[in-house]
Image (tube, each protein chain N blue to C red):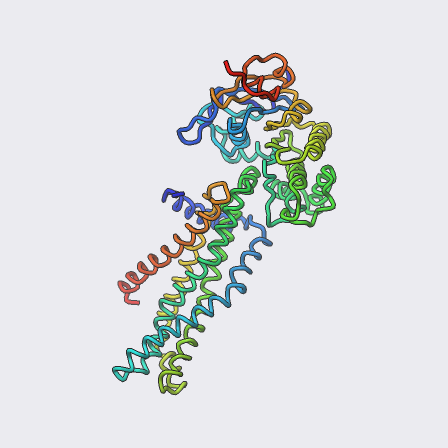
Length: 252
Length: 251
C-alpha cells in the first residue's frame, strides 16, 4: 500500500464550545478524488478548514505524508502548505489584483522561479482552464464560473500534490458545472494530484469521486465511508439513502 | 460584534513585529497595492482635509473675535487661531476626517476580503495578513497624516485670517506677525507627533474591525461603523492623553 498523502486521525472539530463533527478518520492516496459529502451545515467546510490549516481541531491529527500538521512548527507548516492548492467556495480571488497576478502569487511566494518563468507557468495554468484570454481583467469583471476557473488555475499553478476544492460547482449552471467536473478530471490526469472535494452536488460526486466520507449533522460524526456509488447502493442509513438517492427522509 | 481587547494588543504587537521584519528582510506587501493605498489617502484626501480645516480655523477666529473684541484684545485672535490650529485642531480634525474617509474604506475593504475568503487564501499561501494587508495601511496613515496635518495647519490659519480680516479692523501684516510669533516649534512638533499617533490609531482600528468582521454582507457594514466610531473616540481620548502629558512636560 502506498503512503497516504493526507490522513485524518480521530478529528474533533468545534467552534468555541459548539461541537461540529467528531470521530473523523480517513486516508487519501495519491491520485484519488475524495468527496466530503453531507447536507448543508453538517461541517463539510469546517473539516476542510482544519485540513488546510485555517482551523485547529480540538482533538485528533491531520497528517500530511505522515507529518502531523498541527503539531509542526511554523516553518514546517509553511513547507507542508507549499504542496497544497485550494479552490475556495467563493473562488476568493484577490480583488485588487488582475487575473494573471492572482495566479502568479503562489509562485511568487515560493520564490523559486524568475519573473518570466512565473508568468509562463501562470499563463499555462490559465490556458488549462481556458482563461488565458482574461489575464489582464480584474476579478470583479468575471462571471461566477470564470472566477471558479481562475481559482482552479491559482490552486494548481504551483503543481501541488494535494488539491482541495470547496463546493467547486456551487452556484454554477448544469453546463458550467459539467465542464468544471471534466476540468477536474483533466487536472487529475495531468498532474496526478489527489483531490479532496467538498460538495453536495450528486452528479459531481458520482462522476468524479473514487472515495468519500459522509458527515451527519444530527449525530455530528461520519455515518458512511467509501466509494460514493457503493455508499449509494449499500448503506441503509435513512439520511444517507435520502441524500444519495435525492429523496425525502422516510418517517419511521 | 464585540472584539476582545486582547485582539487590539495582538494586532498592535503583530504590526510592530511585521514592521521589524519589513525593515530587516524587506517588505512582503505588493508595491502596487501600497501605492494604490497611498494615493487614496494622500492627494485624493487633500481637498476635504483643507476645506474642513479652513472652516474650523474660521470658526475659531469668529468665536475669538466676538469675545476678545469685548476686551479690546482683537489682535490676539491671531494667537488664538495659530495655537489652537497647530496644537490641537489641525491634528484632531484631520484624524477625524481621515477616520471617516480612509479608515472606513480600510475597514470595508478588509471586511469584504474576509467575507470573500480572500484573507483565508492569503493564510493558506503562508502569507501573514498583518504583513501583507495591515502594515501597508498603517504605514500609509503614519506617513500621510503628518503631511496632511501641515496642509491642515495652512488651511486653518488662512480660514482664521479670512474671518479676522473681515470682522476685525486689522492690518494683514500685523495679523501675520502675531501668528508667526505664536507658532512655535513646540506647538508644531506636538501637532506632528499627534498626527503620527493618530495615524497609527486610525489604521489599527480600521484593520482590527475589518479583519474580525463577520462573514456576511451586514458584517461589512458593522465593521465599518465600529471602526469609524472606535477611531474617532480613540483619537479624542488619545488627544486628552497628549494634553495631560504635554502639560506635565511643560510643552
